Length: 452
Image (tube, rainbow, N blue to C red; front, side):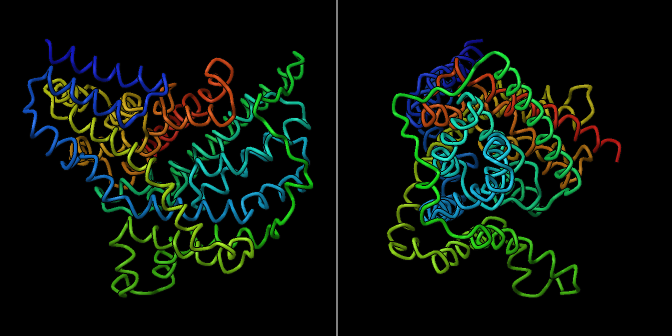
C-alpha cells in the first residue's frame, strides 16, 4: 500500500513542483527518490542503472537524441537570427492582411516547426511580430498564446508525416518504421487538429470583439514597428529553401525508392537504418545552406551554430530527467499492475493504447517523455495484439500530444513566461488547442484506423 501511495506522491509532487516553476531536472530527481524509497527499490541500482543509464535512463535518452536536439536548435537559431523565420511570417502578413493575426501566427508556427525549427525558437521569433499584429487587430494576447501553441505545438509535431520532430523519431527506434509512417492517418489527424483549433480560435476572436476585450501589452513588452521588423529580412522564397531542404532530405530515400532505386543502394540503406542520424543530417545540411544564402547568418556563422547547439542542452536534459523519473516509476509493482490492467482491459487495442499513452504523457507532462516510456513498456504488447507498426507509430505519437500539455507542462510554462501571461489569463485557450483538440482529433483518427 505504501508503494502505491509513494507512487502517487511522487507523480503528484512532480506536477505540483512544475506548476510552481521549480526546475524540472531537480524536481525529477527528488520525485524519483520518493518513489524509490516508498517502493523499496534498491537505491544504488535504481539511481545508477535505472534513473541514469537504464533503457529509460536520463543519459541513455540524452545520448541517443543529442544530435537531433543539437541540430534542431542550431537550425532554429540560424533561421531566427537570419530573420528567415520573420520573412516567412511577413509573407503571410502581406498575403492575408494584418487583421488575420490568428491565421498568420498559426500558419507561421506550423511552417517553421514542420520544417525543423524547434518550438521554443518559433515562440521567440514570432513574439515581436505577434505583438505588432495583435495590437493592430486589437486582439487579446491570450489568443496569441493559443495560436502559437496550435501552430507550433500540435499537428506538426505528432501528426504530419515526415516531420523531424522528436515525437516522430522516437517510435522509429522501437518499431522500425520511418518518419512517414501511416501517412493517411497522419494527414487526416493533422487536418482535424488544424480545423478544430482554428474554429475554436475564431470563435474566441468573435467573443472577444463582442465583449470589448482587446490588446493589453505586458509590462516588459516592447512593440516594434512593422518597418523595424521587416528590416534586413530576406525574400520569403529564399527563406523557405532551408525548410524545404529539411523535408526533402528526409523524404529523398522514399522518393528514390518509388522512382525505382534499390532499397539496398548504400545511401538509401544508410538513411533507412538511421532514424535519428538521418533527420539530424538533414537539419545540419539545411543549417549550412542557410548560412550560405543569408548574409546576416554568414557574419557570425560559427558562433551562431555554437550558441544554437548550447541552447539544446537544457531542453534535452529536462526531457531526459523526466524520462529517468518515468524509468524509476516503470520498475514499481504499481506500474506493472497498471500495465497489465491497460493491456488486459476489455477494450479494442487501439482504444487501450490511446488510454495508456495519454495517461503516461499526462503524468510526466511531456509528450516525448511519455512516448519514450510507452515504447519501452507497452509497444511489444500492442504489436502482439495485432496492431501494425505503422498505425502504432502514428497513433501513439498523436496520443502523446494531448494530455502532455496539462498546466504543469514545461513548454506551457515557458510560453506563458515569454508572453508575460498567467495560467489564469491564457491557459484556457492553450489547453483547448493543445489538449482537447488533439485528443478529439486522435480519437477521430483512431476511429478511421479501425474502419480502414
